[in-house]
View 1 (cartoon, rainbow, N blue to C red):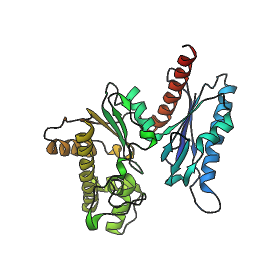
View 2: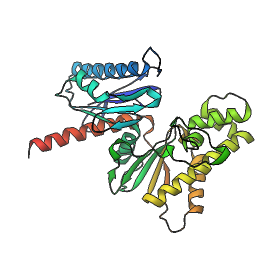
View 3: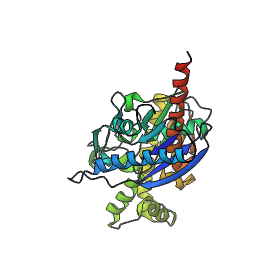
View 4: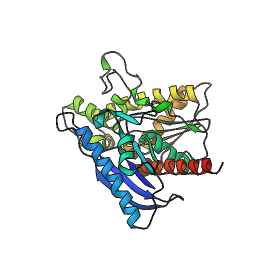
Length: 315
């Protein structure tokens, strides 16, 4: 199984056996997305196709048969056409599935899925959400999206579901415009990118990402504390809303911000506990699969496709 996770600044790639054993893993840089005449969106697609082809060649050289290919990407995937729109990749209706299929041939099935949903599926099968039937995986990284498990099924919504980061929780003059075009989105306050940006705007100092903001927080910096408290407040709002609507029993927090550990998790638990009245209170835990979640999820989804095809052939 060839698996590639295009989320983030580097592609996470692997060859994964049917039992989940990772036979080979590597990372590759994702070309910078640009929208000028150099065609950054196309460059990323070309790099993805090249990576899939080369991993397939390595699998063959190592004596393995490639049964399917799993690729997970950010953005909105049109399940009917296999096209992807992702602002951070400079993709607008880009025919990702068609390009991959043309490169590997019709005989090798290609599964194209959302990176966060794939990560949530891996956490459901082998990680922090194992044993749940109603739960959520919420990675807090450059952006924010959710993988939602409802009554035992991963919700796709034809490729549109789970964009919790693009729901509005900030109003009035405090609202900032989001990359999606709305004002006051959760992502503008509580993502890792937002922490660094908001600290810089507040202090006039440039910081090395959310990591440095957290270091300043630990050192007692009042501006870091205010930025952090703002993020926690809107995250609690978002989790209370989600809990009220969907009633998860467990929420696994992932992404770069989960590195803050209990500095993040315990205030979320306390905030939710204080707000809920009749609702079922979820566990708030750290995701456990880290950066490998998306790639592993891609492989699991692709193996599911193989199993479904075999089942259809024998009925």
